[in-house]
Image (cartoon, rainbow, N blue to C red; front, side):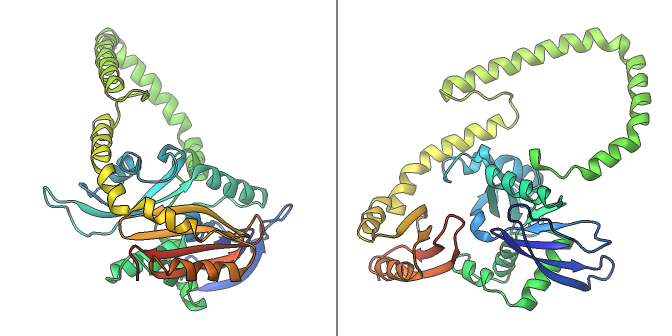
Length: 356
């Protein structure tokens, strides 16, 4: 069962596992006290969240292994996104193909969601009796598809959200089999299969532990001395890092070299980024768009693009804001609008920097 969720409402598609044939389609609710009745025989579920719940950023990374890329993305994103990357679940889509040549960088699309939002979603699903194998995004899948087809990232958000029913079903089938991203990682990892495997091997593990203990007794003293030396080196390394970056207290040296390089890179690029982004000019322009019934909750500024998210008491106010923005921004587009959880109308507006 593939479940597309938007707010407290959703649409489910049930596919036959062997053939991929659509067997059933129905709407559901995740409101207070709601329980989702899945058809008999459904073995696994995959959940999709809308693009406006995610943050995305295109980056160039000097590596092509997806696992290594995921390890370094929190450091690469530090200082480039709103909030602390440590409080986000991050996945990546490698946009290039084939092995990476030495000295070259790989184009990567980083996608991230706040841990608090993901925990709330999984908690609501659990109350409804759902434990998804993966959490992905159909709209992000369409976005990645458009990039692979040679389209520009800017402007694809509206196209990804405005899919036909046939496109939704095709994308749901593809994401159910091979999710574009999966936010069930780290503390949110899917544990059902792991627990099953653990029960299968628990007796073997016990025997293996006994064998290791028997064989390793004569090596215990040597290992202890080596462990002390390693601990001393790690302690000294952490002290040097903390002296270079006051306030930072990493628990271990894993990824520390890359983290330090990323911090230096971010510091060097910050001034240039702010100059290119023209943040002050944008904020001065936004000041003149203020009106009663309008609330901006998120502003993302890149050197060439601006994304605004917020709520309004009516759609007319959103369109009035769009007209005002057209006075000092280009290609102003209402990427998405709909009922907000806190009431009123939520919206997302994208635009390019520079006056008409």
